[in-house]
Picture 1 (cartoon, rainbow, N blue to C red):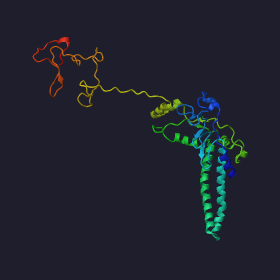
Picture 2 (picture 1 turned 120 degrees about the horizontal axis):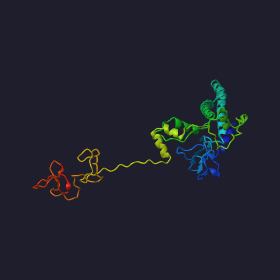
Picture 3 (picture 1 turned 45 degrees about the horizontal axis):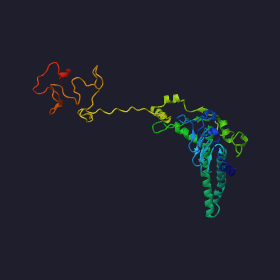
Picture 4 (picture 1 turned 90 degrees about the horizontal axis):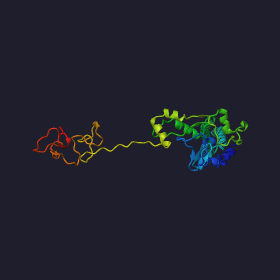
Length: 342
């Protein structure tokens, strides 16, 4: 049975996506008509960029086999084949019969090892007996752990990939460095139904490499959507997760550009903290339009008013504008109604 199951796993394909029209990329058929529920985080349909096909539920692309595998569990290098919907039962039986073979060899060789301690035999034979017993025990322990894990996956309605995805989604907090994965669906439909989905509909043939499970490997009735509704999910997620969701959906964030700092009247940029640094915003006088100079301030480039000399710079102080030397002060303002600055 061990050899037969090994041959069935190697020679039986895991199952591929059909070549029908509804699974080819570019078709506008709704996902509900294909019977699929799994979507990307952005809400788009799951598709394969190598096979150019839409992916059914529980389907993944194998880079080793270069094909999309239905209900992919993992790629097994020991059988040089992917484990999927079509050969999952044969792989599970292969693990069972391998474990039983190791236990059988370990129990039967134990008597020969004990007898070799009292009987005279070549050293090479004694070494082979000890090596056979050690190898069978070690492999039996490892295969027992491996069989226990796959038995638990079968009873839980999971595959190895789904187990890893579920652990990565629930076991790690969402942050800037942890992208959110697609919504995880639960395919646990009860203990008996989960076993029938792997070993087939006939219990009397469960331990024989025949009678594969019923179905096409494309349609799967999800028992419960593990992921919450989009509105509820955004309400509970933090700002980092919401920003990642909007980026994944193709949204763009509008960022206001800061206005460049105004330059000083002398042409140089304002230096923060120094002379001419920008202070708090000044309140505009009522009745004055934006860009209109205030009263008492001369517009750059304009000729000075009568009785006023051009601005002169005093040592140790800013430029001042005052009456020309020798000119009599005028009361009530100068030409143009301008008042002299205090």
